[in-house]
Length: 142
Ligand code: FES
Image 1: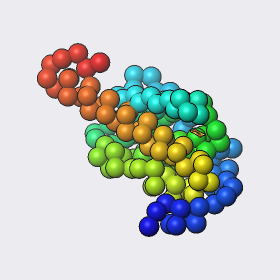
Image 2: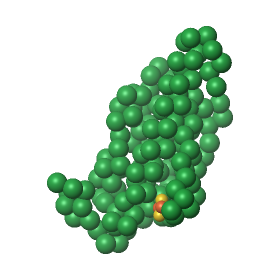
Image 3: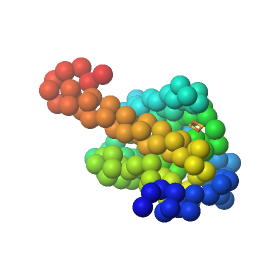
C-alpha cells in the first residue's frame, strides 16, 4: 500500500497541518547542540536545519529552523514532537511516512517536505553519533 492509499492523499492541507503551520512547536536553535543536521532542496529552494540535545541516550530536545512552504513548517513541527523523548535509535527510525500519518497526510506535491524533515533529523542524529564516536576514541568530537 503506498502512502496515498493509506492516507487518502488529501488535495488540500488538512486541519492538523494548518494547525502546526500556524503554531509550530519547538522552533529555534540549541546552543551547544549534540548534533546538527542541515538539508537544502535545490528544486524548491527550501532549507532545513535541525539541532538535537541528547541526555542519557534520549533526545531531550529537538529544535529546528526551516525556510520553506507551509508543509515544510508543519512537517518539521510534527517531526520535533515525534522525536522528542525517543531514544536515539527510535528517533533514527522515524521516517517521512510516520510524519505524514501523524499529520493526516499532505497533498501529493507536498509529500517531499516530510521526507526533508525526517532526513534533516537523521543527519542531526548521524552528526551526534559521529561526534560521540570521535569523543570515545579521544579525537576532537567536531
Ligand atoms: S515545497 Fe519543498 S519542502 Fe515544501
